[in-house]
Image 1 (spheres, helix red, strand yellow):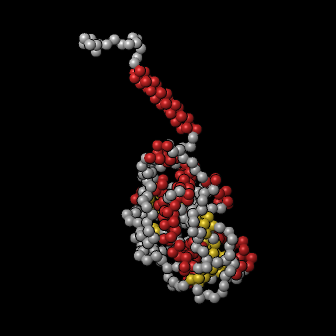
Image 2 (tube, helix red, strand yellow):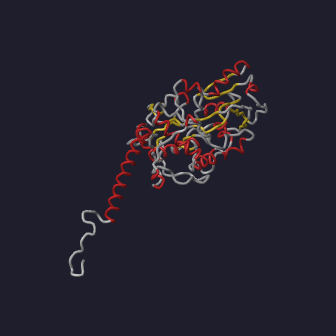
Image 3 (tube, helix red, strand yellow):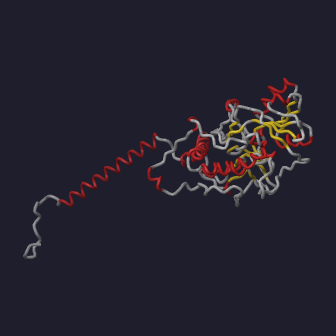
Length: 374
């Protein structure tokens, strides 16, 4: 205003004031930045790795209500069905861990018993007796080149163990290698890597090798004296040697004439690496590998260790000198590593919605789970 109440004249008619010019330049800069960001996002989205949600969609998990997982039901410490129909064991905890990362909390996971010869086809028994195709197989399944060549799509390994032998403690004949089983009757799981080794080696030494569908059948024959020894992966045999953790319900598969057993280290320098049969969908395999990768190399590793400590490490004292399993999770190889797109702002977002809570202390059971028997 002038001294006489009239509006002051613009000192530079036809030009914007300094503050207005700065606002215009700032607005133009913001528009330019938005255009650049949108362009970068489009390029990355088109050429970069997929997001976790894109993998879930490609794997057919979007909108899926229940995840079916084939598991063993007669392997104490690894995967065993209890009298109430629930499942417990190391494999069960690994299956829950993977399912959580795939977006399925415990009530939406259904376990179905699967036999060894059906693991490649992913055919498990439903409660009504029908055979159904499961989404995943987590069933002490050793990764081998032969199985891969026959079409089994394995994940990265999640456990490393080795082949071993158990005998009745009353049998004082030592077993330091498979050759010491010459002339004896030996049982193992049919269609297993252990059966292949028995057929190749023991037949020439005069041993009788017999395969059964279930390891519990072999152990029952050992109790009954029908066979002299049982051989398969040490992590599987260990559960029959050591006492079961306290506070657990009796198993559904009951054995008779139970006797004390002895676990023998046969000096096997090979490794049995267990993997998940993920089926033919590459996105499903990537999701499972991503879960195992995050568990092995990231902050989620406590889940694996809690499962190992509860079910496998607790068996070690009763199984010495045979090592039950290697007490660290195998790291995925280069061929199993998965990259997913994660935008910078996601670092400050809420955690992935299906991540489980803190690992449970050893000896504390989870509650509220639904099993295929309930």
